[in-house]
Image (cartoon, rainbow, N blue to C red; front, side, top):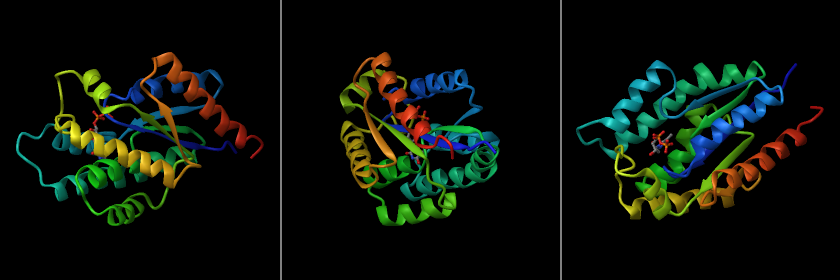
Length: 209
Ligand code: TYD
């Protein structure tokens, strides 16, 4: 039976991770893998509705409500989409996952990180990625790339985005075997070279399994 893979893409808004994910999809398809891409928040119809509240709500949302909405989106996404696709032997590429909640709601908003880790476990049934690519970029560069059309999260201060970035780097230190950092200040092609090396490393590790 084909082995499924679960690879997540993390980093600041404006880190370029979504562009890299698309390139990885083509790269893996050329190698003959069956690849699906998805994202959080906002996969499937339910996720789309939750995403709309989270990113485009005109009224303020409490931090606690925000936290539960991201987790609710994830709980449905893992059960209805991610797990069945991994089981079917596909490579699942996911734009953001559990680390986003720790970085944004934990380090950014100041929610209890231990609690968030527990809630992530409950929401996901403890499904952990085979590889997490962390696109690290200075907050100044990221904000320049975003430009003026910002959603609710992107409109947060530079200080908030710096906290998120440091949170991600802390998470990488805690899970160095799964989370790999890539310098996303570089050009798209340079970043993709790094990305490919890490993806190839994962595939080689699992050859013959
Ligand atoms: P999105 O437009 O997908 O941003 P990007 O394209 O930069 O990934 O918006 C997702 C936003 O939601 C982003 O600002 C990060 C935030 N987010 C959280 O705060 N917590 C989470 O758990 C997730 C999944 C995303």
